[in-house]
Amino acid sequence: MPNTPQTKFRVGSITKQFTSMLIMQLREQRKLKVEDSVCAYVAPCPDTWKPVTIHHLLTHTSGIPTYTALPEWRKVNMVPKTIDEMIGFFRDLPLQWVPGERFAYNNSGYFLLGAVIEKAAEKKYEDVLREQIFAPLGMDDSGYDWSSTIVPRRAAGYQGRGPAMTNADALDMQQPYAAGSLYSTVEDLLKWDQALYTERLLPAAAKRLMWTPFKENYAYGWSVPAPSARTFGHRRTAHAGGINGFSSMIIRVPDTNVTAIVLANNATSPSSQIAGDLLAIYFGQPYTVPAPRTVAKVDPSVFDWYVGRYQLTPTFIMTVTREGNSLITQATGQDKFEVFPESETAFFPRVMDATITFEKDASGRVVALVLRQGGRDQRAKKIE
Image 1 (cartoon, rainbow, N blue to C red):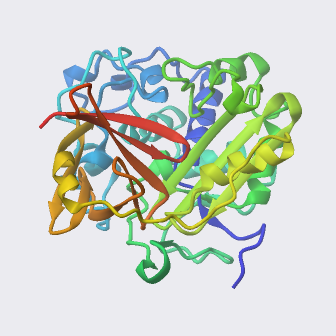
Image 2: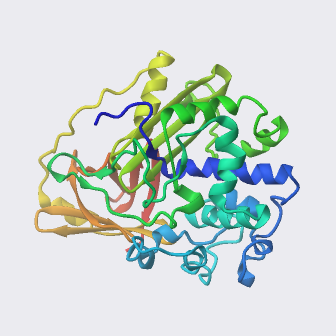
Image 3: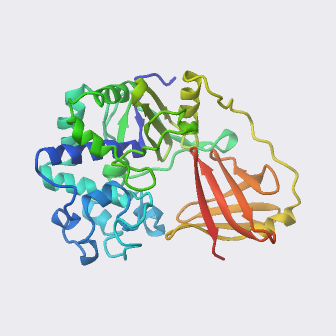
């Protein structure tokens, strides 16, 4: 069945902006403060979490390891888990840095925010969502995507491309929770977008706080980069989403009341690039026409230069190996996949839209790789 504006897609981490809105609404209701320790709402709470505030959780600066990077979690992410069992995956792990000191995208923080919301509101997360956002805005085609619920016009999710395309891996939907559990449609997300221009959900002063970046251009559930050539000279608020079988992006340009919303039911779809190109067309700027990627002829012996381990974050490592005449990459807790040369230093996978470029120092020694995905560059230093 063709996708339509009424088709319901899992939106992955676009969920985070709804979670941050609920936190800000509860703040307005004086049921919490963003300066509160997470330990005021989560029990049992380790002593190491006492300095971690709601603000740190909202801005990905808590230092708590993200559970989605843990190999132990990936082995059981199809198995139903309670909220407490999920927190158990990372409750006893040491902090990676002093809270507030650094930024690293973190699903554990937003999972914990779901628990904070339930404690402060004394209701289930999905009930607070429905009562405080979805019902008031008439977002009747949005909700918590429990796998067991019959949802009309729900898209099926896929992964890979061409002959490699398969059904998406199963996922217990308690596990993404307040970090990525929602489904929606482009029409409902437009209702959400338009409501954010008003004070129907939140006063203007609270919205300004919600959209004030802390570190790495990240505010509360939104990326808010400074105006630049990349943003066509406009301020924007944006967030991508990715979850088994689905890819999504919302980019808002508030000073022009223009928004790009892209929902796809294939995890490898370049939703961020598509959204950016749609805005480029609107603003009369250059954009990219998708084209097949070409494999360059490179002597496989060159692949030996790149073998090693590359650190994206303290708990997220990209391992590069050579298997025969193939270069293979594997990120922490993820499957292996082959990458193909576009040049002697740039490689791409066929299962997703991404590029890996290896960096060398003046002596020609490989020192790092840069992963470009979803319009974002992540540099990983070679550690072995």
